[in-house]
Image (cartoon, rainbow, N blue to C red):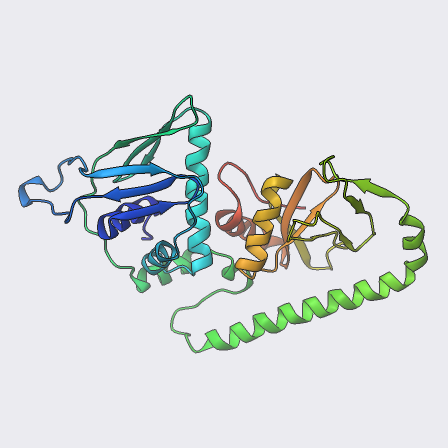
Amino acid sequence: MTLKIATLLAHYLYANKKLDLPGFGTFLLETNTIAVPENQKNKPILLEGVSFLQNTSVKEDPELITYISSHTGKIKPLASSDLESHLELAKQFLNIGKPFLLEGIGTISASKRDEYVFTPGIMLTEPLHEHNSHEQHHEVAEGPTDYKEVFYSKKKGQAWQKPFIFFLVIAGITFAVWGGYTVYKNSSDSKEKVVEEQKENTIFSADSSANTPLTVDTGSVINQKPDSAASVTVQPPAAAGSYKFIVETAEKERALPRFEKLKNSFNLPVLMETKDSVKFNIYFVLRANPADTARMIDSLQRAYTPPGKRAYVE
């Protein structure tokens, strides 16, 4: 059984005496050792010596991501995504005035002055078990749990196929990119005159202080503000046998950094589009049989869709 993020955060604090949570701050544990007497096992024990320093600018801790990855068997990008989803859920609770329980650590609540109030909680007395690869394989056999399984499935007793399957996946992606570029180039040549006429039609950004125009160029890239590292591509219709899986629809302030992280930090073939420069769709274009789309939506939603929202096929 895969360990929960909340459990891993608590045990990481017990072991390292420090826990940095992006957007919240730092937890410090002054107790030198965490030991549970035999006669106290399975009984509630208040966690003593823990304090919280609010710092919303604290960055993601690489050691924490490595810790989560090693105990869940997931690659680091997925471990980071799981942590981000967990903290996003915490912020949603705080935004509606509800306290959020960090299991094994304590409770965080929001004050009227936009400050976080921390109350120590009950310590976890169960030891942390190491990740069991056999259990991971069993779960994968029941259903896909991450982005890799959208492209291929694993089978027990066939470990020799992994390199070959990986090669096929890379070759398939390369062929898809090359094919898409060829189709785009051919269509661009035939529409060159139309594009020239459309250059006069300019849509201005919703941010009036920037005064940076977004030029509409059919089937091409929409120019972003100078401070935006991501580019939004208006894709042509998906090829036969391919589907557009939209994993998130968000406003610009959320969509641009999220797209940047998925594409450049995680190296995923993610795309983004917008029709009105207000709402942005973050999506993948994947080949699939109609009968497999529901399973693929479920896998993508668990890995890349924020809590409370749903992925869907357009």
